[in-house]
Length: 126
Image 1: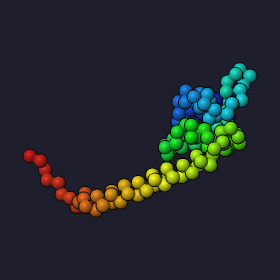
Image 2: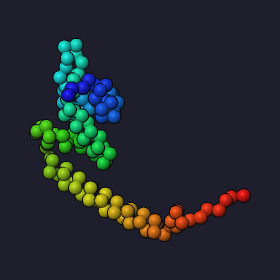
Image 3: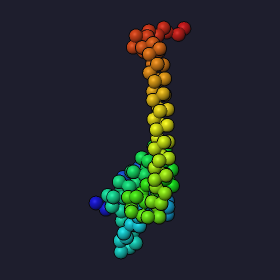
Image 4: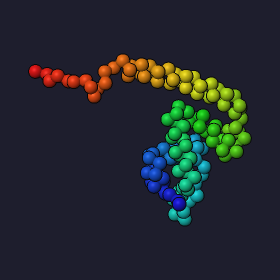
């Protein structure tokens, strides 16, 4: 299935300007165009934008995502120094996992020390 920019924006839950921005940054490959000059995007563009947005939610910068997509696109220039980048990202992710585990344990302890809302009887305020 093919999409015009407004359809793609709606499908990916992003703004049309976001798509244009991704194009300018090279995150999206040049789309084909209709005879009237409208951009036509494919299902692959949908997957790619959803990947970009998910990676951003996970803390990756657009520059880092560009580098990762360089591997997908087999772009030698964007793949340069990939080993060091990946090693650094692995360390960063492991630190975040460690922090999240500590936060999870803190929340579990907090939950265990709080009264159960179901058994807690609230007295009316007068």
